[in-house]
Image (tube, rainbow, N blue to C red; front, top):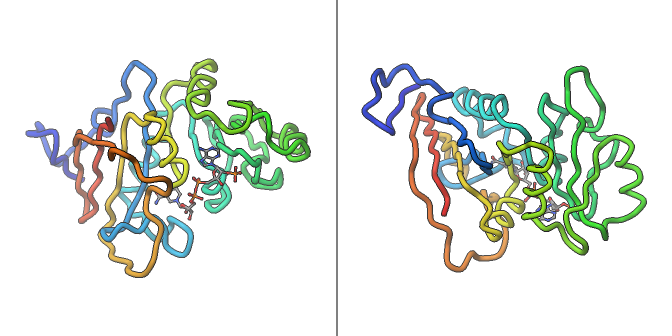
Length: 228
Ligand SMILES: NC(=O)c1ccc[n+]([C@@H]2O[C@H](COP(=O)([O-])OP(=O)(O)OC[C@H]3O[C@@H](n4cnc5c(N)ncnc54)[C@H](OP(=O)(O)O)[C@@H]3O)[C@@H](O)[C@H]2O)c1
């Protein structure tokens, strides 16, 4: 892996991910995605075919250094999320994830998952999930993403790593809550129709971004942008 930016690196061939992906002292919402060169965020509904060894290394590093993984219900289900050492917080208005999902089966050394929902969520599903997750209301009729951040902060969680998916990312952008976007560009062109990393209403005006770092490994580019 080589560090291309910021440069010049003392030794561009030795990349310290702790240095490149240092978290700020203040609360930070960092979003991590992988995409093909032609913009596909999933192949056959999964990200598995997009990953490269460098993407997996950064994905693992970001997970190992965050306080909480925030993810939309669609991604938690499609990607068969499991419990992790840090809490996995699933954002869901309708409580679509089933308590039978592997995420909700406790495993040694893993944290209890959070489900971030709203007061109007279906009562039966809430009761079913309450037995295997911390179900937290963040709003009445809809999930207020600002309250999501507040509730996480209240629990001492401030290194917030959002792993998608596209609908949650768009909603976070619309709410102006995203601090950083980490994006892996995999050296693949998949063609055909495919989801992008955003899926939601047009942002008016578009969010701006400034380049913070660029790594390269075997034609995979790992870019990090500050989002404004
Ligand atoms: N390329 C990548 O890096 C990457 C990363 C992640 C996911 N993906 C792919 O993206 C696809 C899933 O896309 P998606 O857009 O459905 O994923 P998503 O954003 O994770 O899930 C959408 C669901 O999450 C909940 N949700 C999202 N935003 C919400 C909000 N503002 N308020 C309340 N609930 C909210 C809702 O669940 P309820 O219906 O339960 O209310 C909604 O139906 C999969 O194919 C996955 O593989 C790709």
